[in-house]
Amino acid sequence: PTIEVLDFSAGQVAEAMTLHEHSLFSRVKQTEFLGQGWSKEDKAVRCPGLTDLIGVFNRWCHYVAYHIINSNAKEMRSK
Image 1 (cartoon, rainbow, N blue to C red):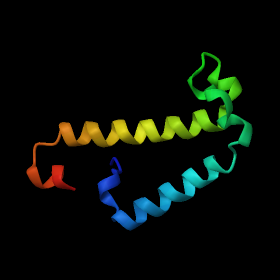
Image 2 (cartoon, one colour; image 1 turned 180 degrees about the vertical axis):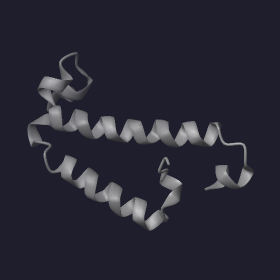
Image 3 (cartoon, rainbow, N blue to C red; image 1 turned 60 degrees about the horizontal axis):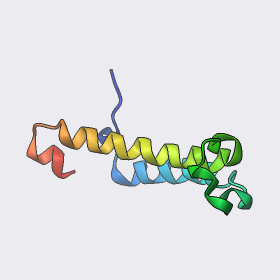
């Protein structure tokens, strides 16, 4: 069986996301915020921590948007 985010309470999801994102954010070096390195061609080299954090944020956004758009039930879309 597949486990989905909606199988958990909002509090459990928020706690898990916070712990995961904190571990990513704590690896970001101050220098990664300089010169907009995250938008450059070599962003993975210049800003590995920030690139990882942005990637997680983008994946969550895509996940949520996908499930909202593809949900048939009005109740499910409202969650």
